[in-house]
Length: 509
Image 1: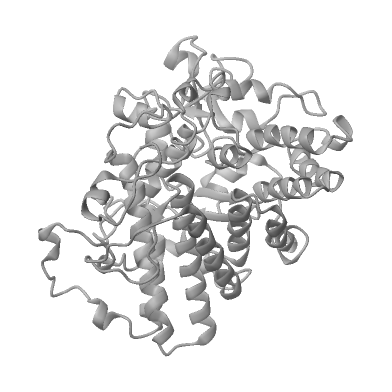
Image 2: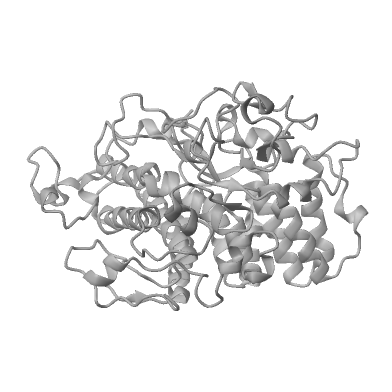
């Protein structure tokens, strides 16, 4: 387990730019760009450094929290009012607010590292299959960072070559960023293997991961016809023999069943007991884990900086399994008074009952999927629990959405039925047969909420469906503050605008 992380030997300390004069001092023991890119080992270490970006706090902590709290399924009740306001309250007077800026910075750190690989690896004499694979990984990872920038900030500076401190790139429109993501992912598909033969490569991105992200990219732009191609590869083509649903839904979120048959793309984490920093250029002393669980766990265990809106819990209770039981995804997705349906005196929260910890209070809920309550009674900043970015269930529901959007609703049912069958629900084709295109999409919104709750997909879904606005404030009061034409995007950091006069602030900010 976590074998990829054993081979992240170098965190590309040359891959972080700063205007801090202290960081401009030359370390004579540190390899420079000019002498580094010499052989296949250098190429692989350069790619490993891109993966290392996922252990930085902007990625391993704040980005998942931003996606959850900006949607209607979560919010922040943090006593740190700036955090509570920015995370789901759509109130961000400080355009340089640290947790949000961390995501921006780390995306560009990852892009810089990917650009280094893309610029330098083609000139290295090495095995061509390995070279193409490493370049495929770099193209995928660059695309992934730009995908998140486009989704959160929309219009962003785009850099496609190794940058210098003097570069002042202009703002690129979101449509052009999406186009670049498409191009990078097409290159990644060509270079990446469907599977890896060597166990040391467990956790590296695959052709399936690139196909899934390419489909997501098309769908976010309303290009449903184009999205069908990569989804066909995953659902009816070669990918159909590689991926499948796990029989037990909860296994997708346990450290004992990571990188399983349902995993299409997940960030790899592990514990480094000697870590002293989140800065991944300070190898080998940096944190290889994630602190998502520390910031999302219930009070008394974690900081509870991201909580769940309880309206979603009621959605799980609308339908029972064919055996007359509660949807098992509810207890796998949330910690709340009735995670055990017998009530707070039976619901276990890190070794104690809910009643022991919080009394009989039943009006708060916490996202459970990436917590560690299944194997220990505490949290911390070194969680080894991998972050599952894309699961095959997500792919199947995406495919159903594409088929429905392109006029083949009857064919879409089978893929929703497959997801429902895993948790014991009756086929939708039996409970609600013959739905029209609009009604099927409304049902699919419900299906995606239940299957993917708390996994960070809800924001993209709401954007894609055009559902952002005050009309959903009955589910999430934060949307009373949502201004159409402004809050779809985060503000570009003011410090970047001050340094680079070629940048333009996003509309409404």
